[in-house]
Length: 262
Image (tube, rainbow, N blue to C red):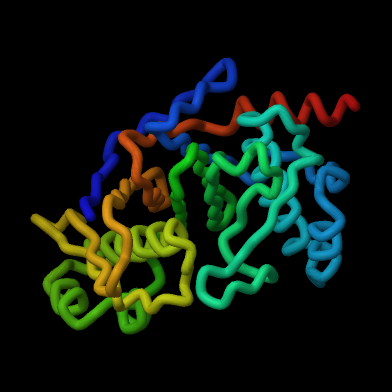
């Protein structure tokens, strides 16, 4: 499947909710600190129970903000209030409903697809219609050696190619490889249950050019877009024509102000 490098990403800051056509994906880049942590009432009973299981306050806050951002962003594409959105999961491997790729449980909204990811203080929420998609974001840590991580995220050919990279290029290429693979695995619904080494990223002139899945009978037609943004590497796997990138700052400010005044 082809890999597109979105090297000049300029985040749109819309004044109103953008229309989502079937042939595109909207990817919202959100600061986790942009939502008011005093809105746990928006969560479902199950989410509030999961929140209580976190021991450290820092982890509770991170979980709360991630779930609030997911609800707030997705609700703007529906006529359903953020607090009334229902989510369910089914594992594509074992069929369990206790884990797996999340989706909206309201029948009228099942054509709306989404994928969420977070790293450090930033989250991405990708939304589309009638087409599965997957998103991943990783903060680039240039102080951490990536050689050990390459051992379980790449195959022998990939590792051999990495040996020719400078240390700086090796780090950048590793995060590209990681996010591309994870975004695709999230899109097809299997996540990290599939060995990352069964996927191969093909490089041309030091840049990712294609992603190959060696697993038999995988569906065709996938594309992956890679977007280096500040200190982050973001990937979205999709089957549509275009990905539009948005800043969630204005949207989240408006929504949190609205809910805070209730």
